Image 1: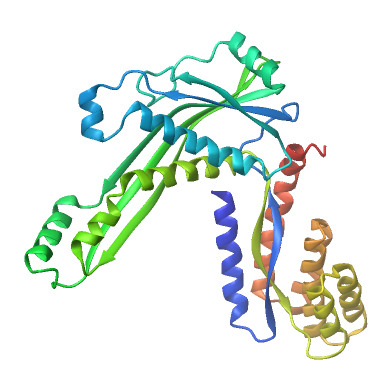
Image 2 (image 1 turned 90 degrees about the vertical axis):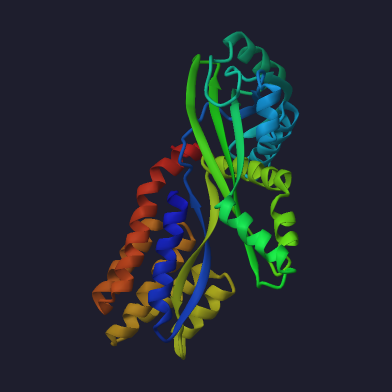
Length: 348
């Protein structure tokens, strides 16, 4: 995901700077655009569950441990994570539809026929929303890694009275969700794709029975991964704030130090003015480079990315540090994202 790549990139910058003296680690809130752009005319959205399987045989349910009732509960948990996350953003007004529909694919493993537009119209009118985000199918799975070797290890530990050292049992809970976004006004599907999420589980214990008992709480694992799947997908359709690492040069004395204190007090405009004074009045390239870098940070925090890029370029000219170029790349990425972010926020 782009958000993760950006965070890793920022962490790389943090590592480079950490080796230097006189650097203060900072965290700033950065709004990142959603991976999926929903048109601005969709300002309110209904959330509908249409993923209940209609044709799961008794034999299949026995072998997999899944039942339609459990599937319904897990899909609702997925939508709960989705709704909770969407409600943290001002992008949509969100309404959870009380209605539930059987999946168009009988086993709820893939996309089937579209929801009839008459039904879409009716639901949108009932809940006074501009569109529907529909969970079309939902499937979960839970696997123990290397079950044969794990079983041998556990049996051996049990036979030895549980004194054979620590036993480690690993498993993975997976979920796959299929989403569609219906726009009744244009009779169009704005989005259709499957979304996957998994969570790794590990239990260690000198008591092998305890380790296995903790891990085989299958329902707990599937409930957790189901809710996380809704949460993770929601993060792809609304712009959200993320905490990212940045760095700021400390000041040992004078205005460079004063600007640092102003920034820590969240007086970023005052800090910018102080650091700009250092840049304009200092005769030392090293000090001018530090001041320019801090000015760039100040403008980024205040949302003026173009000014931030101008000042980080000045910092590189004065100091020639590779880490400054890395920060410039971060700003370049944010500037490229700005158009999409403005579109998603309706600022065009």
